[in-house]
Figure 1: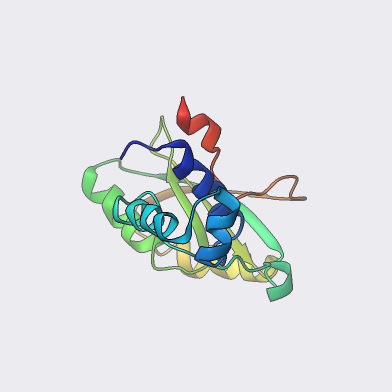
Figure 2: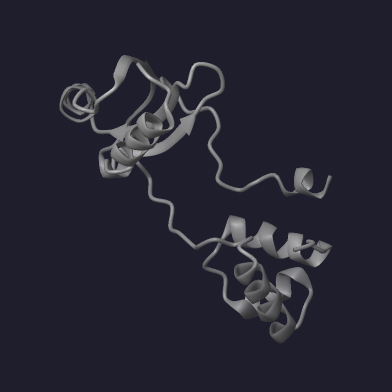
Length: 157
């Protein structure tokens, strides 16, 4: 789908507040409600808008520990990578998981209440996964920037 300037304005507004009514969204992007709704539905159908979510505050939920864990696998076969990815997806603490370039290392980010929970996660959840060779953790001391909105200006280029 080729994105028009109107689509980008709609996406900008929805990335900031997905709870906007169609009437309010239409007002903000300078459309009447019917064409605005049609554009939103087209963006949804094309998969540009995947879903709508509420962003919860981790600290308010007692999940103030943000940890990045690098995991190296002993073997980089397609089967071992798929098995690791299947197993890691089972854990709700895992917020993100990326296969990194180079040595087939994975980088995951977990949200946990405290160090004891991290220890339990590593010992009870990660180490039983077959094929893990090395686990390294890094703690986020302070969140300097966090955003969920994609850089739409870069998408135009």
